[in-house]
Length: 309
View 1 (cartoon, rainbow, N blue to C red):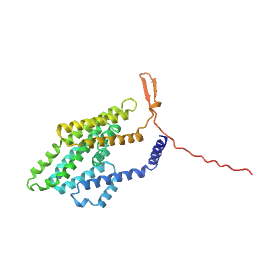
View 2: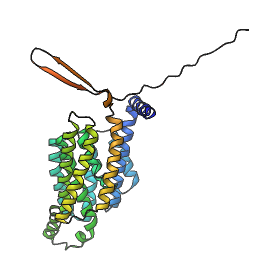
View 3: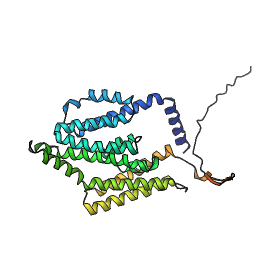
View 4: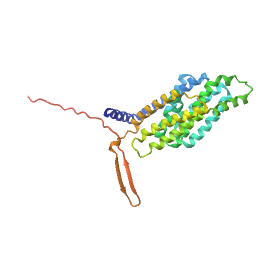
């Protein structure tokens, strides 16, 4: 355990010393990964599929605010949608505009949530996000979480139905609009996931703020069970097509990753908990203090022994 704590402190010290270089590097990796995943999943407009274009735009995003990545990613999606049909781009743009208004109104600092949510779906670990968001953020972050879910399902719907959309009568714009809007609005799986993730996030947030030992661990497991129950019930009621095996395995992986995340972010020693009571002119205060697990870097001293002849 001590070696792990020392490793954690070394990593923290390394990041604090090199934050000016590491932060742009991580933003570059995130931007490249996001844009490349969009091109792989959509890829209808060949002009922006070039890795050189992706690299140049990712370099720009690495030195600019994170919110720019959301805008650039949305533009990439709209360009790919426009390559399918103009109606597809208009409907997708309308959905994105509505989400941006909600996002910038309630949780403008949750850029990572909006970006990472579709990526986690691609890695088959989307159940990790509501747990992490509940542990680190507040209730308003469910807006960003929901926006990320919508982005994934919109992209997935366009990817699966692109040939059908393109094959519709060119003069039948109304039919294209209706097909796209009905496909998004009537996506029961999307709404089941949104409701489940929002409830899970709020439950995790409430539990991890309780003054009980191992609150974060309890919040993880209760949130994971809540998420599984909601998704299974939604699958039974609306036949959303959610794989039970994928749900169970993804939840187990999500808990493991969340525990690793807890070790680096919120690692405390409940065996040394202290309770403090004091007062002022107006209040009595009862404070529970839980110390963090810290490990100072070991120092090695070298002694020189000289022999006296």
